[in-house]
Length: 420
Image (cartoon, rainbow, N blue to C red; front, side, top):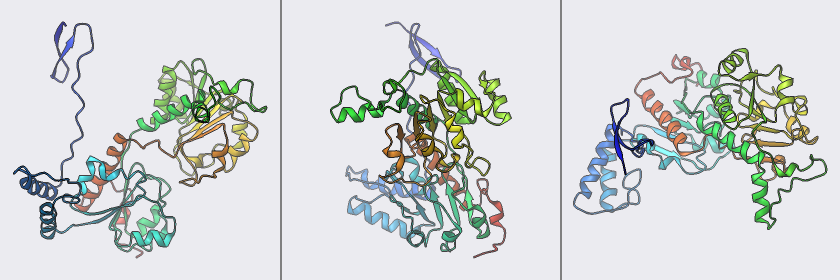
């Protein structure tokens, strides 16, 4: 094998085959710098194991471990009292405790709840002593009525961007700081494209029928559907419409271009200018976007101006063979607009990852429709995104506790309180 030396711009050196791509070292696992007390405790426990003894350890150290570890942990915690009571809500997959970044909270009393409760009294009881609350996206709404029952709450740390699920004004009135996190557009954009591919090739329908013993049957062949609708279709040469050309919309447009689709953009004027600068075509009008798109994907941010912005008459303009994808917000669609339009077979297919009330129940109307694909709001649910979301949320809590206000979305809350 002919190997030559390759130097990257950063100065690192790799070996590579002649006329081939460089060998890349394996990606390193994310390392989290522990708070000083956590690092000291872990070093204490390491010394116990240097003699060759081994035991099962998990965070916090000593749980499910040997008696020596448990005793050492208890003694250490007595000398270093846990400083904050923190709650993490709605961890459906019980994933947070297994993240690398969870060690950032090793010095604190953390409770992780895996199930969602909707009753105000139940939720208030869970959070009665909590000082810092971590929210996983919009899974639990935070109302003024709930906040009134949480006298110890000092801060709410949001994973990702803050949305309308938090009563920001009520938080401000009660002196509760709301900390805004960060996120990445990559995971939701990739899920959007996965739904486009799955829907256009009828993959969920084929898989479901195969499990029932039906070979090459999608089941999409009612008299109301276009001829051979169940066969599916390729993307090349089709028109991809995108309403909202932000970070996610831009990525989805790139995927469409890579698949040979004609990309059509609609949105505010600054979005259209950005799309034109990237080489995409702006739709002549909102009506033209719905009429011309074979695949239409919504990527608008949710606020008062966009709530219910997609009307039933918009959907009725779509082709009977077209696909609507919504991985953004369910509230972008006018109430009942989608169900009513689907009763007229416009659009022909729908793929959605978001719902007005979550989690949805088994009898949810759209789940019963064979031309609708529903996923359980997993646009951001994957390992790298979770590490990013939660490391930012935890970092914001620790920073705020040390007096850093840079992530506070409502600095007015830090002035003398008006309500308590």
